[in-house]
Image (cartoon, one colour):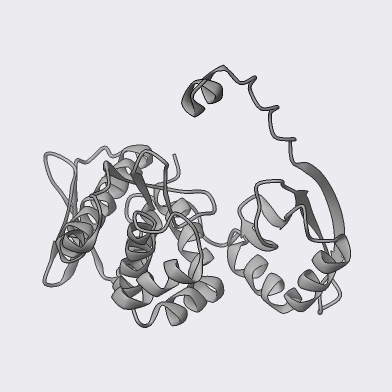
Length: 264
């Protein structure tokens, strides 16, 4: 029997065990106690601490002990407190609405906003910032949908400008590129070659956005985070460490800002 036939006829492997989850209390350096979701995940390769709108999550791979996870968490308490503060919703900032004074964030800057009545809703960039033309009766939900489309067009423009630089050195092009709000990730590459990017990236510095694109494109060469992978990233983006630090320190504020601007 050939190897291929044995593989096809072999009984299916048992499904991977579901991650085990436990919420643990953690005391921050300022004395506050917060809840952290600790997840033991068989698919994880390293200990990771992430913060999203759902809170803090500590992922522990099967080979790491809980004591190692506790030490890792203790070493990152200052970072955790900083991220929780930046990612917390701002009670003083209502959702984006008609007549908002702005500015409108784009590519690391705040652009002045101008409003005027028009027959149809449109959002355009000009030399003075961003102009929003709108009918007299404008629903906030319609405005936020238009803002989302405005950001999507700007993000596509950036990706379309950068992508041709990197495609010739890749084994293949992405099957497609999706740009949409992502909960906690900045980008991902699926096994079938579909590349996803967070729409919030267009609010931040262009170099940081381009780094995320480069990062995901390099997964077409190395589908992992090995030294070979980071070598490919550094070849295309020598400042990747600085960009990664920026996302750890400042990035979550982008997601919060985008949610305020486009939330239904």
